[in-house]
Length: 407
Image 1 (cartoon, rainbow, N blue to C red):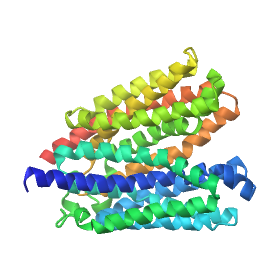
Image 2: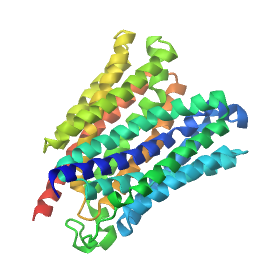
Image 3: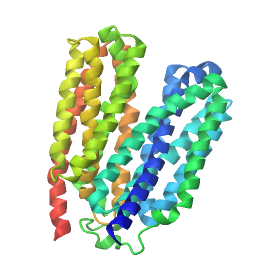
């Protein structure tokens, strides 16, 4: 295959996988975006509404670990298609809900659909994208997720405010339907590897067959990395805007703008991080520098010693540096995965992401209930600093795995 054909193939796969990942993140916040409509409709408390999202991420986290095994046993393409279909079905179920139990079932089904994306996406990227462009693939993958997060509340609130929440959810169901049709049309580009290496022969997999990778300490270090970093992210997503209002006396609209700046800057950081990661062998150093800087800026926000406009700038800077670390993070984990166990490894370690997103709102919500808005940013800084410790462990273990693969 010549360079032009290889570039075209890489771009096609990266675009398709990125589109699927954006759809997944779009569904992360479909319930949160509709809280103003769901709360009076079903007479629910904020705790009950929060439980719906906890169910979503808990089911997704548990299912993600299992989905990795299914990906390696069958194919990432088939698993990805099924996940997208489940997301669409969950939106239809939620739109027809007439009780809290039905909402819970819809959240459960959406969590099942969401569980497949990381093991399937990363397996497809590793199998179908050339090594030279893999960092860019990871970069686009992260950016597409951020776009999904940003677009979902805009779309759902726009439709719901002009019609009703049920119509908004039915409209949201059209997205996975259209994406699934596009992926099926381009299914040849996402075809499974024709002759995978037997799992027993995989380097670093060790004894124990399909479960042998679970004995690798680096896998659990990666899990801890995602769990801890996701708790910090959950604090920013859930309560950063509210904390900024209390700490700086800014309006809610201005504080929400600060969060939007964070998301945009994170996407820009991921774009740059793809180029940075592609040209570096020291991915752990990039991650440590990024999270160290982010932790210091979070502490500065907690101190409330800067003007309100500077708080918005700091939020953007935190998003930028953490976004830069994204592609290096994925490359670091790829280096930790034994051969032919990519789906299982990414499934297990990314379940830490969902676990952190489920735990974070509970922790930071308690701080806000106790009237400690500065504690939110202190907590974010603490968890970002803890990410550095896990990165040190993952980096050292990954180099050991790399030596084993080479041997």
